[in-house]
Amino acid sequence: PHVHTCTYPDARMPLPFLELSDHELFPSLNFVVVGWLLLVFFPRWKPTFTITLLMAVVYAAMYLLLVVHLFAFGDAKLPEGAGFNTFEEVLKLFSFSPAVFAGWVHYISFDLFVGRYIVMDSQERGIPHLAIVWIVALSLFVAPIGLTLYFVVRTVWGLCFGVKTKSD
Image 1: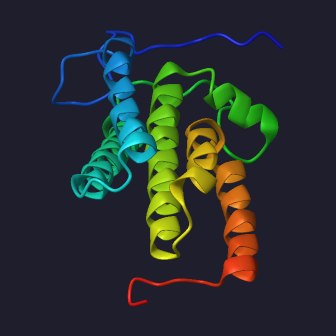
Image 2 (image 1 turned 180 degrees about the horizontal axis):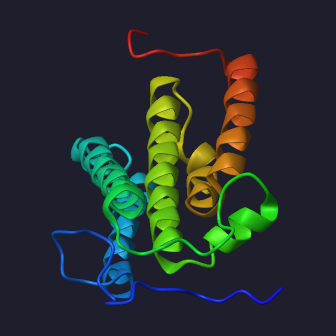
């Protein structure tokens, strides 16, 4: 089936207090790369975890605003047949530009939380950053796979070297 994109009729979206379209706001989401660079290259710098938490929370709050605005206050109509119950409904939902934008904000927020967790947890357990940095980088693109691999590495590390805690 042909997938098309839809936008708000007046091209104003997604947040009610910003007169910008989703297309105009999208490049600002690339700021998330700063958080990933901190996790990869400056994992022991004291502000890294505060900055990455703040970034993830800001993106999560943006996601909340997007969803509330889109479904409760937005004047745009979802494509006919869009929903969450079947693959076809989800496909129609993601043919809708505001839903794609909100989905991308969800993705970058959640993935940054996952990357942050991996780095913090590995430090608490005494796992060297070089042993997990590739997983952190992978989590930028596929966080569920990265998190699963981290749990494997964490388990193997614990079995081979024991588990350290901050109190050790």
